[in-house]
Image (tube, rainbow, N blue to C red; front, top):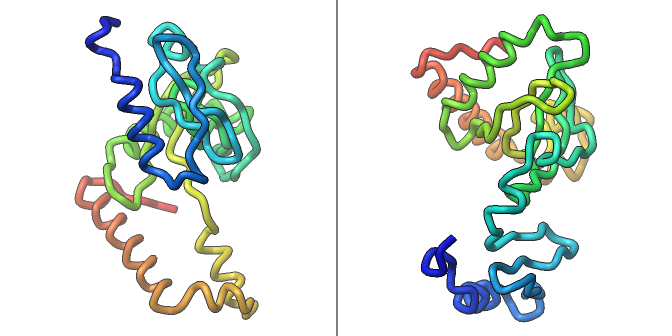
Length: 193
């Protein structure tokens, strides 16, 4: 990479440290004249700039660091993964072991989801094959509770859930779901779950 294509590290560091309160400012570490990164702390580490010859050449098996199971359904499972190339957590969906016959459906659904760009539809980041031949796709990791769990807690009259999820808030969430389904339908996609 030519010197003129590299970011002005001093200006970038100054902008980063000025964008947070002094007590929250990350500790900057020089890792050579070509780049720097933020020291990993309790929050997510942020990579400001990384040279092309490091993480950009990782294959899928090296790129994703496995994490815990987030959920499982009829076709596959979703695990938390750390994307080493980008430096963020993602959700990785794979087929259940022995469900290879569902691969065409899995790929079809992945491509459809990847083409639907809407604020309430989880974006697909990557589609590939791991070293062991497992087909996967990665998507944004969504935090929080499922609507089913919230409704169960409300049905049980859980005081914290009742306080946190008013009828108005739940109706707003339902309206968002309706808008996402309408958007998908307008693109010729029918959700059958």
